[in-house]
Image 1 (cartoon, helix red, strand yellow):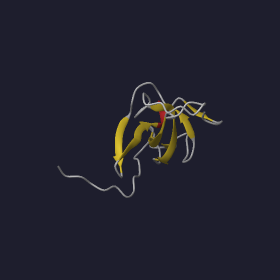
Image 2: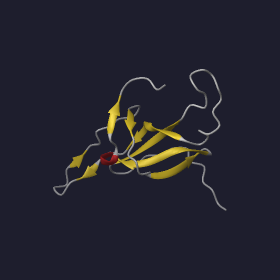
Image 3: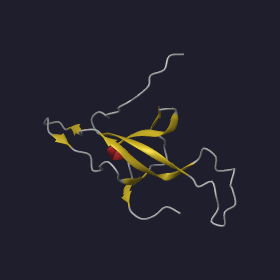
Image 4: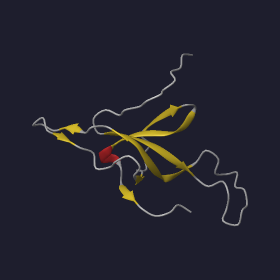
Length: 106
């Protein structure tokens, strides 16, 4: 099977590259949780944003998120992408993202 080593990823149009945040593998009391292996929170970090979509008049509508934003992900999965052997990346359209969130993840 052929594989490509991606060194740079620039989304097209209004697509957004998200790095998913894995669930903690430890409880608050320090117990290691094995059932959360390979599961992710509904929050992701914006890694790269496309330039925007083009409306019917030819005007570019820029995405509402920027690199580094923490966003609430929709229930459906976008397009998964493996970068450098990591399956933590997913591509969504800007309009599919639910919200920009602030705070700390526990």
